[in-house]
Length: 300
Image (cartoon, helix red, strand yellow):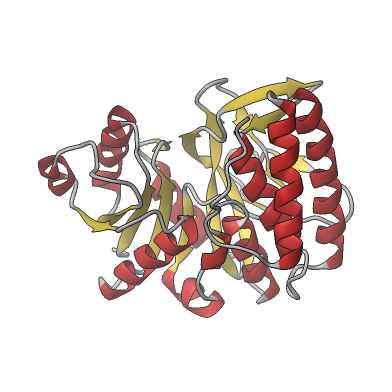
């Protein structure tokens, strides 16, 4: 049996959701580690131990990228064959990881160079499936894979991402200075640049919520964040435009997406000046390469 270890990045998690995540993961993985960027975890050590998880306690919030790297390094020392990563508020279905393993081997039999596989996300607030994005050529095409067949995708989010340890060793660490936002996207694109392929599967499912809220614009839904997260989104989005492994068509596509988001968040975000100021500061810092945790406040 393959040795599969889970890595959970935590920062002041909801105790009920977090305990549920550990409980559902316990029978699905060989073991796991919680990288805690916050203060004391709001669940008992007995519960953590019963789920066969270790804890790496950070002195301060070092961000998602650093936490993921610590988790992967921990799993490597444990002799992991695969790593599956999670946000603190996600909830995989009881067969999610076995479904990902089955999909992985099916893709190998097809001769695919599998770099990572992600589950179909179900937004726990709306109950709607969150579509994957197809590899970008010009337009962004959102796709929902049919049952029984994985589809190639542009990138995968952190939560539920199933990665062979050999791939992480080949592609390298997540970019620590990004701190949060675009961490998974940059790594996904770097993975593809090295010849690996990413896949999404509807056979594996994950309950998940992105952002503070989700709002409808026509037939599309947009994930909503506070001004500080909008700062990170625009800062890191602008910064990775400068990286050599980000191909031109993707830069153009994501640049257009950022322009649309700037318009929507400025017009619909409250307070408007806080959101606009955060995004403008983010773009400036991203262009100038000022990364890491922000010391700025954007609340009016």
